[in-house]
Length: 451
Image (tube, rainbow, N blue to C red; front, side, top):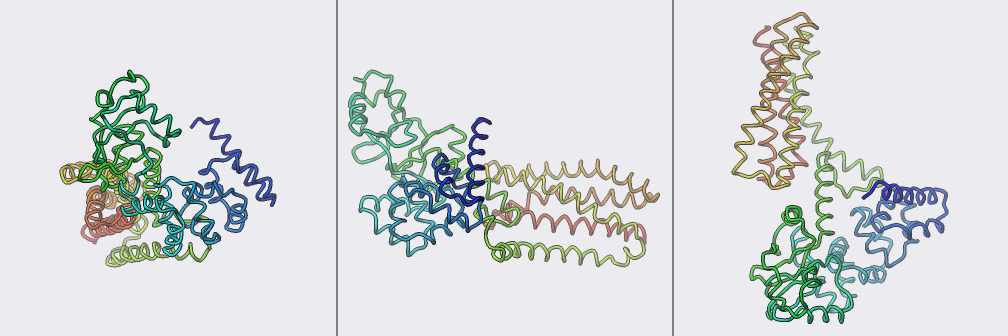
């Protein structure tokens, strides 16, 4: 998006926020109509709950569905609590099937059943088809609103069919070709439909080399396929090659954005759906779990340091320098950990190259350890005038930074094998490992050489 467009959108949102702060909600309603659903969602998430609910009353019913899909789960739940079933059913009439399935999944079970019963039979069956697949699969992403034709008709027949239909689904860059039993055969790109001789048959100009997506594939694999092949849409088939629907780029962008947000927030033990304006007690309770786990690991590191209390009592210099080794190891390990988690998310790391990556990162850690151990040892010698202390901290740095490189690779690989999110638990485990190894190396060497 050009910077000028970003500035205009930002100015609109700022204007609405200022008017809301002054209490003039009627004027804000006029400005809201000029915003896109995603922009209104951003605005709702930036307001305290009291003003958020007041603003929601001024949003038109036809826009509520798309806006609810854009806000986080916690904000959506708080808004849905204020709505009755009739209003929820009315919202669903303006949503595409794939978006509608996402929306219905966010509702309480009792409300979900009522909303589904309020739909007409055909609409309900389409939604239930999407709901029958996991939310994070190709089936959960696919849109059933699509156009199919047979291969034995001419392009002129297809054009007349489209004119009679009067409208085509959004993001339609190709028409799907199926046989009379509904099995996928290929695609007819819109550009070929418009530029080839109308008397040509579909079979003569259709493409059969287009990638298809199995309905059971994960949404991350789907996103990677779209990224690698620059797709706008892709057909979805089952194991019998029966055409089921299509996935479009707008849904894939949502998957990529949500995965990126989840990775960043998980590193702090949070969810991207957490409401910034949620009640104090609720926010405190969520963060306390993570802080408690971190406190336990901190006590473990302190216990290790306590094993060398006699050494620390006799040589005060060690206490001053003690934090350097764990800190440097933690940073080195975090760099490796971040790269490995990103590689896992992109599908670049597997059993075939894990050993190579492990060796490489161990060597990188060793070389960095050699470089920075020299620097730290020299500073320690100039500071305290004690060559032994400089040598000890230098050797400890080499040990800990090498171990940090190895831990940065092995921790996310092991966590993933146990179906634990590396982005969520990797940081805490890595910090514990580098703290413990760093303290043991530094204080252990000090005990050997100085006492």
